[in-house]
Length: 277
Image 1: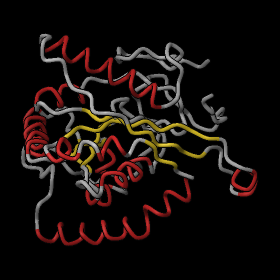
Image 2 (image 1 turned 60 degrees about the horizontal axis):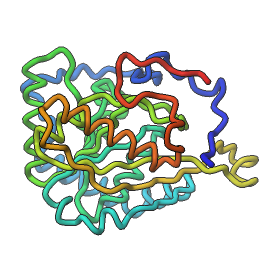
Image 3 (image 1 turned 90 degrees about the vertical axis):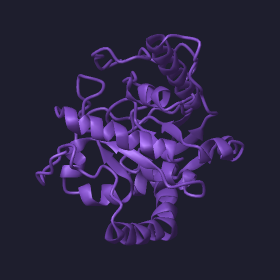
Image 4 (image 1 turned 180 degrees about the vertical axis):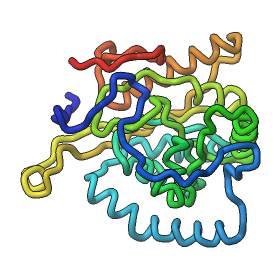
């Protein structure tokens, strides 16, 4: 049985299932246009990034496993597909904690350090510089030339054998267990670049007495890694996209330990609204 933490009145989940509720207080005024470096390659950046990755390995990853009580299953699905990963893949997961990308990074670091698509306001915010060092790539908004540059950067990353993490639900809802509807970005990127999708899913466990009473933790985390999913090239482009989204959503629901047919949301986002019960 899936453990559903008590989040009542703790988190202001918005009405729209893809919307954000965290407030980014700072705006550094960065413009994400065709001149922005969506992946920084300067020597100074790469030097600092090396040290960030070193600290992730020796301090942050162990701390995340301890703090979240993280248990990872399905690592064999990465090990058995080393060649596939080496040629570039898209990874996806539900987004239910500020540290969940750290957990995903920890499973991939021995293959290749991933990049992750992030909300543009996060890169412009107080933690934007750190997000860049851990691979954050902002999505440009209302800027056609910026969108083209972003798309070209993503394609080059994947075709050079990179790993791209995407959160298809569109935003983070802390400790929220149902799998929300997927937006189509991850599927169109995977299909355009002819790359498979590796689904991840976070689920929760009930914490023990010490964590629950003394440290006030409402849940511990499982991270479940699935097998690669390939697009069906026998379909036309739009049907291929819809089919991939549905199969990836179904896989994530299963990985999260949710019984088939009981997830409360449809697989594909259509201005979907929060379901309260």
